[in-house]
Amino acid sequence: MNTYVIGIDGGGSHTRVAVADGDGQLLSYVEKGGCNRYHDANAEQHVLGGIAEALEQAGIKGEQVAAIQAGMAGLDREEEFAWAEGVLAQTGILGRRSAVNDTHIAHTAAFNGRPGIVAIGGTGSLILARTEQEIWLRNDQFGHYAPTAARFLSYDTVHSVLAGRYEPEDHSFIKQMLAYWNVRSVPELAALGTAGFAVDKQAMNRKFSQMAPLVTEAAIQQIPLAMRVCDSAADTAVVGILMLASCFHSQQVSYTLTGSCLTSSYMKAAVQKGLGQNHSSTSREFNYISSELPAVGGAILDAFQLAGIKVNQGTPAALQNQLQAYGT
Image 1 (cartoon, rainbow, N blue to C red):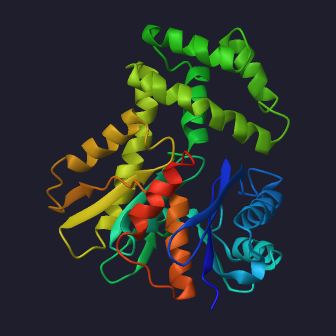
Image 2: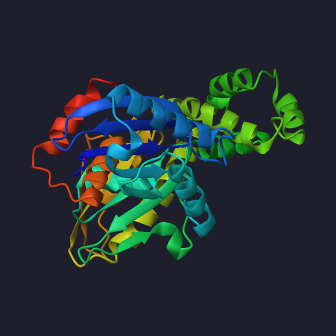
C-alpha cells in the first residue's frame, strides 16, 4: 500500500504544497504563487509546478501517492470544482484525489474533525462551520458575506476618502494611501479611479489587496477612518459567526480566525469583543481556538483520512513543528 500523501493550501496569494509519509514525517515543502484562477492567470501552473517540485524533492513519483487533498481558494460552484479536479488529474497521481474550498483545510487544522467555526479573512473571505451532527454550513448559504478580504478593506477606505468621509485626524494616513497609489492628491486618486485603478480587474484586485496592511496598521494606530472600516468589516464577521452558531445545539461554540486581515491584532480584537458581548437572545458562549497548525497541515491530515491511513494523536503537533521549520 502506498503511504505517501500530499496536502495543498492554495490561497489567492500563495500555493503551499507538502508531502508526508504515513508516519507523519514531512518529506518536502514547496511554495508557489496563488491558485485562485480569478485572481491569478497562472493558477494552474502554480499548482502543477508546486506538486511536481514537491514530488521531486521527496524523491517519489505520483503513482506512489495514496491521496492528495487540495484546499483551493475560489472553489464554490460545480464548474470550479471540475476545473480543480481536472488540474489534479494531470499530476499522474493514482491515489485518491480531492479538491475542496481552502476553508475546509483551515477547519481541519484548527479542529481536526471536531465541531467549530472558522472565519477566513485574507485574500478571500468565508465563514465555515461543522456542527455536532457533522453538518457543514457556510455563511454564503444564507446569502451572507463578510467583506473581511483584504481588497474590500482597501475598497472601503478608498471609497470613503473619495466620498470625503474623513476627518483631520486621518490626514497622515491619507498621505500614506496617496503615496501607495503614486498620486499627490485626492482628485488625482479620483482620476485614477475613472480609469479603473489598473489595467484590468485582476490587477486592480491585486493592487487593492496589497494595500490592506496599511489599513489594518492604521487601525492599530487609532486612525479614525481605518478603525471605522475595520470595525464595520469585523462586525459582519461577528454576524456570520453568530448566525452559524445558531445551528449548533451546544451553548458553547468554538471558533477560530485565519487570514492576514482577520488575524491582524485590531481585527482579531474587534471580532473577539463582538462575540464576547452578552447576546441575550442566544445565551451562547464563544471559545476562541488559537490554531497553531498551518492550513497545509490540515490538508495533510485530510489526505491521511482519504487514504485510510490512521494517525496517532501526536501527528498534528509533529506536523506543526516540522512546518514551522519552513517558516509557515
